[in-house]
Image (cartoon, rainbow, N blue to C red):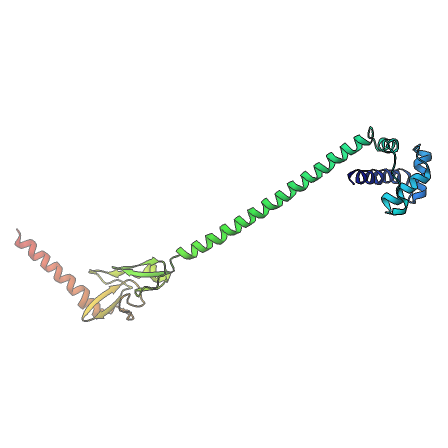
Length: 234
C-alpha cells in the first residue's frame, strides 16, 4: 500500500510537470507529449492507463508500472531513480510532519501564554478587589482606610472625608472652617463638615459664641494658670 501511494504521487507529479511544460490539458495530449517530446519509453496507451488509474481513479484501468518505468519517470522529475524519488518524498513528508508538529506546538504555546495572561489578569483583579480598602474606620482623631469586613464601626469609604475630617484636640484659636459637636455638655471640634464619626450626629459650624466660650475662654484660662504657676515657681 505504501509503494502504491508513492507510485500515485510519482504519476501525479509527472503529469503535473508535463502539463506545465506543454500547456496541454487532456490526458491524451499529455501522454502523447511525454511519449513523443520527452521520449518516455512507455507507450501512450500505458501512460493513459497510468493516468486513468492513479489520477482519475478508474479501477478498471489498474496497471502497475515496472521498475524500469518507475526509474524512467523518476528521472524525468530529476531524481536518479525511483528509490531516489521515494527517499526525497519520505524526507519531504517527514519535514512536513515536523513542521506540522512545530506549528501545533507553537499554537498550543501561544494558547497557553494567552491563558496564563488571562488568568494572571483575572487573579490580579481578584486580589485587588479582595484586598482593596473600600471602607474606613475612625481611629482616635482621624479615619483610616480598611478592607470592608462588616464591622459595626466601619463606614463606606469617602475619600474627601477620609482626607479632610480630623478631630482638633484642645484648639487654641478659632479657624475659618471649624465644625463641632456638643454631646453631654462636651464639645469636640473637627476640621471638616459631615457626621460625627462616633455618634453619627451632624456637625455644626463653629459660631462666635462657641468659639468664645469653648475655645478662647479655655485658652485664656490655661494661659493665666500657666503664668500664675510660672510666677509662683520663681
